[in-house]
Image (cartoon, rainbow, N blue to C red):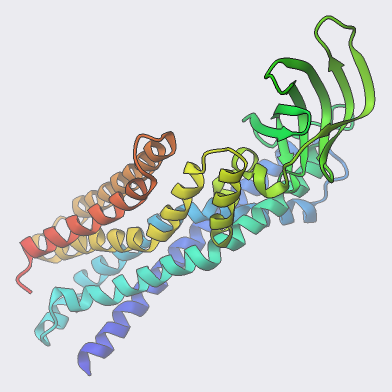
Length: 364
């Protein structure tokens, strides 16, 4: 009974610390992002404070999702350090609890936070990010050029149609890939010979064709022609162009399996989507690794002293684990490491390292 009560107490303290740190970071990010959006839209009179606040709200989950491991790490460090300095962990040991018994509640809470982040928070983040992109498109699309400066990254789409193969380049996209801006299309015949190059202000995906507006058609050996509307046949739908147009981070966890199948059917590699899916599945275990690292720091405080140095060491260890996770994801995205290994190795390694250190230092 005492162990259960103390377990609930430790879990509540840890959960409160994580929520407090996470909400503090969210507040700071929202404030900074709101000020940045206000600066970018200062010359647009139609943009109101309410609209800026709405865009900032929609953008916030995508930014704060990356903070979750650090919120868990700092929350766990704060919890264990405070429990140590107040001698509450000493009392827990005195009533017969081992280190594993008072670490288990925070570990379970961290795992549940990871499950919630993957299954609930991530879909909300992806949906809000799409809404933010739509509003930003309406704000920043210039009437003269129609190009939305959503990203400096160029997108490429390859397609097959009744006319042959086409390669589409776009500067920006929205509406889940149904609208493209700053479009260049290279059309090839069935013998893979270049037939024409089309430059257009924008393109909209219709029923079996891309509808290009303000298009300029360049045919080798002939004069250029301008068309207000120009059609290019396609066999793609919005789901099949996600691999090139939609970043994996903006695809909901529940939609990733379908996105992988669609990407493979359209002829693109699905490595980035597979990596994102495995990373989301591994997220609860990454948060558990963060708690174990914090436990090593918290236990060292009351036994060996040096609060500041040990806290700094724990933060550094957690940061290195996070950097290692991102490095592994980059290697997986580049194809040097299998997506499963890239996503799971940092979390598993962090858990094993934390358990090993605790086993070495503790007699419980």
